[in-house]
Length: 400
Image (cartoon, rainbow, N blue to C red; front, side, top):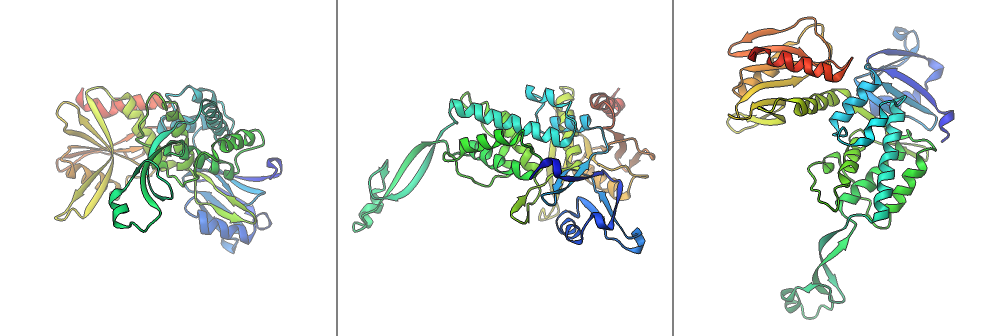
C-alpha cells in the first residue's frame, strides 16, 4: 500500500459529513455498518439525505482502514495536544521522558506512528542486551531423563518407555516478551505506519521471533506486572503495549489484507484521564479508588462499578462519589441523577458528583434526601492542569 495514494475521509467528533453517492460504494457502506456502526453513524443515500451518504463520528477518535486505498480518520473535537495529554495521563506515560517530544505531533496518525517507533527502538535496544529470561516449570513425557522423573508414574507403568519428567527451563518465551511480540504483530496492520516506521517495527518483531511464541494478549495483561532490576526497563514498554492493544478494534478482511483499526473510546479515555489526574493531584489526606465494585440484593445479584470514590485516608470513610459523563447535555438526565444517587446510597456517602467535560447549562446543586448532588466540570477544551485545579477547588469548596 502506498500511503501517498490513500484517500482519507476525515470525520470530526459528532459532526455530520455528506458524501456524494459516487464517493462511497454500497460495499463500503456495508462494511461500515456491520463492523463500525457504534463508532460511525451511517445514513444511506435516500430522499431524506438528498441521495447523499451521511456519516457522523460517535464519540470515537482514531483510524479505520476500510480498504487498501480508503481510510476514515476520526478526529477529536478538542485540540490534538489535549488529546495527547489525556492519553499521557491515562496510560501512565507521563513518567517516561520519551513522551515529551510527541506533543508537537501534527496528527493522531503521526502520534501513533512515533509511539510505535519508540516502542520498536526500545525493543531493539533490549534485544542487544538480551531479552529477559525466567525459569518456567514443565511436565513432559520424554524418551530421556530431564530434571526430576515422576517415580510413581514410572512404577505404575513399567512398560512405558517414555518417562514423565518435571524440569525447569531458563527461557525468554515468557509473558514479558510475548506482550511485546503480540503488540508488534498488530501495529503494522493498523494502516497508520508509513515506510519511515515500518523498517524499525519489522526489525524489532524479527528480533523476537524464534525466541518468543506469538500468543494472543489482552490489554489487561499489561497491568499489575512485577518488575525487578533485571526487567525494570520493560515497564514503559508494557505501558506502550497497553496503549496500542487497548485501542485496537476488531480486524476485518479485505482482499488479501487484514486490517486492524485504531480506535479510542473518548468516553472511556475521559474517565481514565480524570481518574489518573485526580490520583496524581489529590491532597495527601485523601485516597482515590477507581471502578469500585459493589453488590446489593439478598443474593448480591445486582452489581455496580463506581467510576471514582474519594476516601478519607485516616478514617477510610467514603467522602465523594464521582461519576464521569463524556457528553454535553442541554439538561441533566434523570437517569444520570438516579445512577449517582444510587451509588452514594449504596456506599453510605453524602456527596455525589456528576463530572462533565465542559460547562453544563443546568447546574445541579441540590439535596435528594440525605445526598448532596452536584454537577461539576473538568473541562478538556483548554489547559488541562488549570481545569483540574479548578475542578478540585469546586469539589472541596464545601470543606473550606
